[in-house]
Length: 210
Image (cartoon, rainbow, N blue to C red):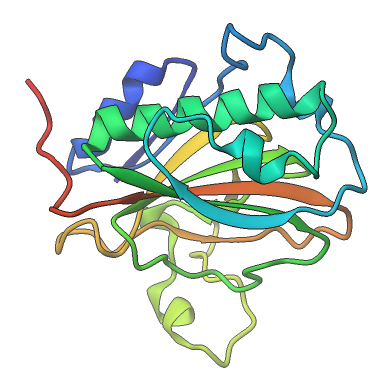
């Protein structure tokens, strides 16, 4: 299995390739709000919210108006709206479920697979999600729920998504040929601000366009 680390949003289309498990795109804020969202998001701001919106809609502004100042909110909302638009165009989803959370301890401390078709993760503050490439996973350790060992094969290492990147991970429900990207929240004592975006389908994800 391959993973792509790129600076082109167009590379998200490779998610339909059978041998691609993860695509992570380093992307600046949308042109409408050129401020760097990672730099704008203030520390020590408690946020915990979730909602559903149509791809491209800017509904985060209303949901988060009490959590961010007038400088940060438009840029953050624009980034979230742009990410949902990418998912809508790419996958044909009618809605996107969004969760934004301030974390001061690992939300998912054990390595695991999400049982969803796919999920986009964006870390706006703090270190990004840790993950293990498919070929590096020690499946016996992963299945042993009593073990605290990192389920990585000898001589291999874990990887980490970059702060601010838009990272699309295949989940366990993508198809029967791949069981999903193994990942976890980083064991980090500081503060993180994480946004997860789940495409929501009334039908299976659309086929790749030629």
